[in-house]
Length: 283
Length: 61
Image: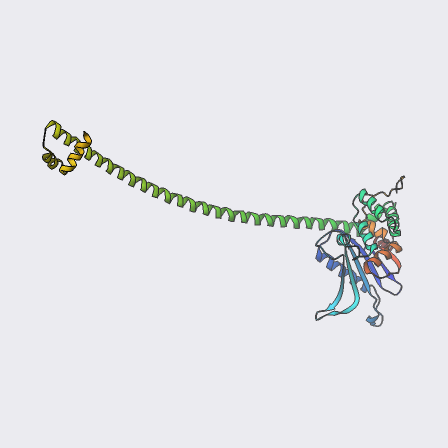
């Protein structure tokens, strides 16, 4: 753990900073730390009732979900959530982005100052922080201790300690796992998108095939109508030709052969009145 | 703090850096104020041990 302390009446306290993490990682780690703080206590003559409380606090700087600013974890019975089973362990998970976002009256002013301090990324952030909270003694103390910490001569030596090199390696591993998780999620989304596209394409192809089949059917019907119209046209042309031949024959019989109308009527198979009408039209 | 009285940020060691956190909050007053604001009740530690101090004592380096 990053820092721990014991109070005069025996309660153990710890505070840790965690920038990258998974939910299960934090859940297990906080419980492990709490158990370790309990296990450090001596139990004399099996007097477990004398064990002192432990309070484990984790300052979590990255956003996972939108959580309450401070999550408090205690032990309850499965069938009784009203009463604490044992007050030995209390875990406090402080979600910095949620504290920063919180309305002024939902978290204490000092917690808000700590949250803004831990959210500093740039010189401008730091200047704004100092300007906003310049009237609070806590701001001066934070800036003083920060300046002292970054200017420590033995800083590199401290960074090189096994605990911090392990924490750095662990942070890198977390980042790698998080990136892998994001990549897997993106790949899964891409697979889903591709499957949806395949489905859309198949549906559109099916619709296009149905339209082509409809068009083909209409084309066949149009061809049939065209053939029918052509047949009717031919039939009409034949009738016109036959009628023209009859007219020519009538005219020829009348004017060349000087046949009487009744003979012409008999020869061409048309009534005498029709022959007279045709001749009237011809004149 | 620089010559102009402005606090300088060390971009390699942001305030949330765990090594910096461990050093800064080994300060009894700061540790107490942080945990009081988190827990919501006063805390009064006898002594605060940082991870680096713990390893220093453990391995006597």
